Image 1 (cartoon, helix red, strand yellow):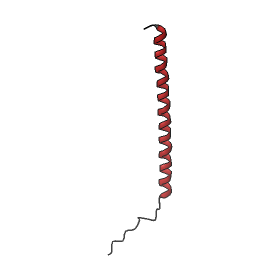
Image 2: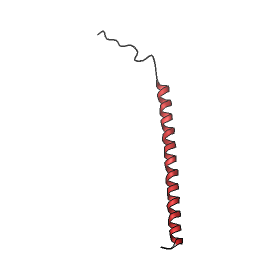
Image 3: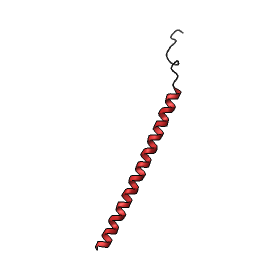
Image 4: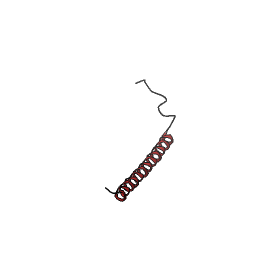
Length: 58
């Protein structure tokens, strides 16, 4: 394999790796945003007065 072909292959591999890293970062950021929204939703749904008393008399 000559130097020019080797250089092209290495550059293509480098670009592919950069694309994969970028996609992974995007997926991680989206997962973080989703988890933050889920936590906010759970915090808003908390009703402290429910479940504090149990009626055990039948």
